[in-house]
Length: 296
Image (tube, rainbow, N blue to C red):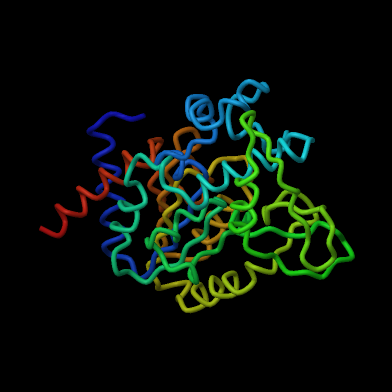
């Protein structure tokens, strides 16, 4: 967290860049949704929503990534609640962080890339889902993990609802685990990047759209602003790395990097960066106020 005077200065720099921009690339990581309320590292949130899993030794939602329960009744008993809350619900959302983000982008030509699987960037109407690349996948789909199966990912919510109907008092589900509608296998999981089995096909169209967006800009003349919020080093090749390449590629670009712990950039582009070591919501709020001053 930075001093108020410094925060206001950085927010004004960011606001001026967006005001003058020809186009805005909106990119986000876990820090954006965490600031909105869906914090995977929060032990308090985990205990509130999943007390049964806390009794099993889990402390926060982040722990399940790479450490999911082996028992299918426990795994799907948890997922049918967790995904329903994170991807389809609103009760965990405590801040209007995404409203602020949408507001600062305004009517500028834009495109979005996120590493979040919660759909928050589009599912409540903030951005057009056809203009969002969900690069790490989505909780909105299930997929078959069988290497010989040619099924396409399918909607997760009906299955989650079915699993919820079988919930027991200890958090397990008595309902049968999901199975592939094509081959019948129970080797099924969410369509998220968790291994070589990850099905990329749902993202191909949006990735093509991103390339069309970038190709529509002049590398020497277009003022591209890249807003990057809450992207750290868990998967730097997904958000941070590409953004640094785009900043180098577009000679009049500006990278606005908002990250509590990693607000830095390579030396060759720092002169075109606004680097803010601040909470996403707090920075977007300050940026909103700065844009108000510019437009008054």
